Length: 127
Image (cartoon, rainbow, N blue to C red):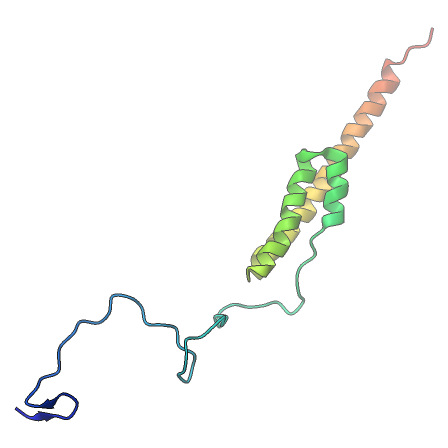
């Protein structure tokens, strides 16, 4: 047998299987594992965080309650949460849905108010 410089003369290196766990995510160029490195496939929009539409959602909640306003408030809150999680497309979707539900809530509230006014005017009687 030949001489192995690492293990000494006439000693074969052990044939261990590869580890079952994945190797650490080392930074490019070697060194310690990468900390808080964004993957290269994440696209951050240049415009910044989409609008939350909180004022619209609050007015919608005051006019229609949970029917449209509660849903609008939920999606308005989700804009910031999804943006902070690094999900700009999810934040844009939540912003769009907050705006839609805010408008729906205001429309439902205005329609309900209009029906109450018409109903009260029709029910008043003159003697």
